Length: 54
Image (cartoon, rainbow, N blue to C red):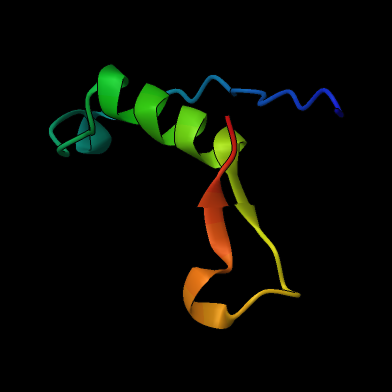
Protein backbone atom coordinates (compact mmCIF):
# COMPACT_ATOMS: atom_id res chain seq x y z
CA UNK A 1 0.00 0.00 0.00
CA UNK A 2 1.30 3.45 -0.86
CA UNK A 3 2.32 5.74 1.96
CA UNK A 4 0.31 8.95 1.73
CA UNK A 5 1.34 11.95 3.77
CA UNK A 6 -0.92 14.90 4.45
CA UNK A 7 1.13 18.04 4.84
CA UNK A 8 -0.12 20.99 6.81
CA UNK A 9 0.84 24.60 6.29
CA UNK A 10 1.12 27.34 8.85
CA UNK A 11 -1.21 30.21 8.05
CA UNK A 12 -0.76 33.56 9.73
CA UNK A 13 -4.14 34.98 10.71
CA UNK A 14 -4.88 38.65 10.43
CA UNK A 15 -7.02 40.60 12.90
CA UNK A 16 -9.97 40.24 10.54
CA UNK A 17 -9.59 36.43 10.48
CA UNK A 18 -9.14 36.07 14.24
CA UNK A 19 -12.88 36.30 14.94
CA UNK A 20 -13.94 33.96 12.11
CA UNK A 21 -15.39 30.63 13.32
CA UNK A 22 -13.02 27.72 12.87
CA UNK A 23 -13.50 23.94 13.11
CA UNK A 24 -12.11 22.14 16.13
CA UNK A 25 -8.85 20.23 15.76
CA UNK A 26 -10.70 16.97 16.48
CA UNK A 27 -13.00 17.65 13.50
CA UNK A 28 -10.05 18.26 11.20
CA UNK A 29 -8.30 15.11 12.48
CA UNK A 30 -11.46 13.06 11.87
CA UNK A 31 -11.81 14.36 8.31
CA UNK A 32 -8.14 13.65 7.56
CA UNK A 33 -8.48 10.06 8.81
CA UNK A 34 -11.70 9.60 6.81
CA UNK A 35 -10.02 10.93 3.65
CA UNK A 36 -7.10 8.52 4.12
CA UNK A 37 -9.47 5.56 4.52
CA UNK A 38 -12.05 6.37 1.83
CA UNK A 39 -11.79 4.64 -1.53
CA UNK A 40 -14.03 4.86 -4.60
CA UNK A 41 -14.14 1.90 -6.95
CA UNK A 42 -15.42 3.05 -10.37
CA UNK A 43 -16.03 -0.51 -11.62
CA UNK A 44 -18.78 -1.10 -9.04
CA UNK A 45 -22.36 0.20 -9.09
CA UNK A 46 -22.36 3.97 -8.40
CA UNK A 47 -24.59 3.56 -5.34
CA UNK A 48 -22.03 1.36 -3.58
CA UNK A 49 -18.82 2.57 -5.24
CA UNK A 50 -17.57 4.44 -2.15
CA UNK A 51 -16.23 2.40 0.73
CA UNK A 52 -14.14 2.78 3.84
CA UNK A 53 -10.96 0.70 3.72
CA UNK A 54 -9.46 -0.26 7.01
